[in-house]
Length: 98
Length: 435
Image 1 (tube, rainbow over the protein chains, first blue to last red):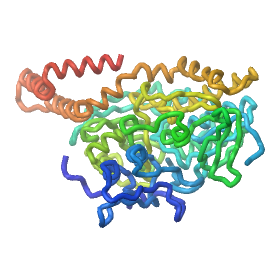
Image 2 (cartoon, each protein chain N blue to C red):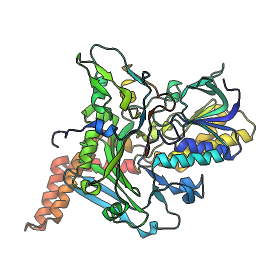
Image 3 (cartoon, rainbow over the protein chains, first blue to last red):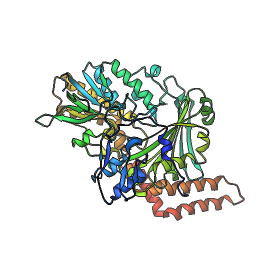
Image 4 (cartoon, rainbow over the protein chains, first blue to last red):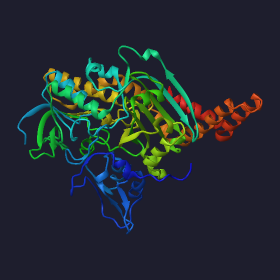
C-alpha cells in the first residue's frame, strides 16, 4: 500500500449534528507528563481524531466531535489514562441516519 | 426519587431494548424504558440489515408500517486485493417474495418507528435520560437505576440492561467485564446519497430490490476486518471495520482505511458523485461464544450487544439483539406470572431459553472462529486474498502461456507464500473451527 492519503476528519465530522455540552466533557484525559502507549494509540485509533498531541508532548482531548464509539474507552480506560462516561441525556452526537 | 414503581426498567432503546420493552408491555407489565438520545435511534449505528423473521415475532405486520429501505435479492462477497476483487454473488428472484426475508434499513429512522410501537403497547419511554448507576439494596440485589435527571432514582422489580456494546452500567457494577480490544471491532461508516435511479442502475436493481456487498482482503491491511456496501433507497451505506486491538497494534487510522476502501477501483464507481450526509462509528462485539458474560443475576438481565451477542461470521447482530430482548422479556414475564421474585435463580430461565434458541446455538457453532481469524489475520486478510486474486488473473488472462504452466505457477505461488504444511494447517484449522 502507498502512503496514507491525507484525510481531513474535520470535514467528515462537519456532516454530523451535535449538541455540545459546553464545559462538561464526557471524556477526560488524566494529567500526565509522558503519555502511555495506550494514550498514544488514541491519536490514530480515534475515528473522530479527538485526541491530539500538544506542544509539550502530552495527549489532549477535545470531545466536541466525538461520535461516542467507545474505542478510547476500550483501549485506555483500563490503564486509568482516561475517564469515560456517556454525555448527559440529550447531549453529544445526534445521528440522523445512524 | 420517583415514587412510582415499575415492573421493569429497560436501559436503552436499540433493537434489544425495544424488543424487551415491547414484549413486556404487551404482557401488561408496567415498563419504563430509558434512552440517553434525543429520540430513540439517535445514538444507534448499524449497517444496517433487518432480519424479517425475528422482527415478525415482535410485530407481525411491520412490513406495512416500518420505514424499510430495500428488500435484499442479492448478496455479494468480495475478496479484494489492491486493484481487484474476486466475487461470489448470489442473486435470486426467490427473494422477490411476498414477505421478503431481509431488508436494508436506516437505524435512526427505523428505531424511532419501533419505539412508537413500544409506546403504543403501553410502555413509558423517557428520552434524553442517561442512566448513571444501578441501585442496590442492602442485600446487593439490583432494585433500580439512578439517572442524570434531578429526581434521579427509580425502582423496579427487574432491570433489563440493553445498553449496547459500550454499556457502562453493567461493567461499572461489576456484572460483566469491559470489552477488550481483541473482542470488539471498530467500524466507521458514511452515508452516500444519490438519486434512486442511479443506485438502481449501478447495482442492477429494479423497484425496491436491494443488494449488499461484504468485502474482505487487503482493504484491512492485514488486520482482521471487513468492508460493507449496502444499497438503500436513496443512499448507500458504506463502511469498514477492524478489531480494535489491530488498530492499536498497527497505528492504522479508521478514516484512512475508509477513504482507501472508497477509492478502490471496484468501489469508487459505485459512489462517484454522491453527497455524504453522515459519518459515524460504532463498536461491534466480535468475541463470539467465549466472550458472552453472565446473562442474569439478582434483579437484572443483560441482552443484545451488551451481552456480546453478535455472530461475526454471518454479520448478524440486530436479530440476536431483538431475539435476546424478546426472550429475556418472556422469561421475566414467566417469573412474574408465577408471582415469584426476580432472583438470579428464577431469572436463570432466561439463559435456558436463550441456550435453546438459534442465538446461542449459532454462536456455539462458531466458537473457535473468532480466535482463529484474530490470530491469523495476516494470512486470511492479506496473503490469501492476494494469492486468490493472482490465481484468478492467471486463469482469465490470455497470453499464450499453456494452461498447464499457468496452473503450475498458481500452485507454486500458494506453496511459496504459505508452504505445504501451512496450507494444510490453515485448511484444517479453518474446517475445524467452522464445523
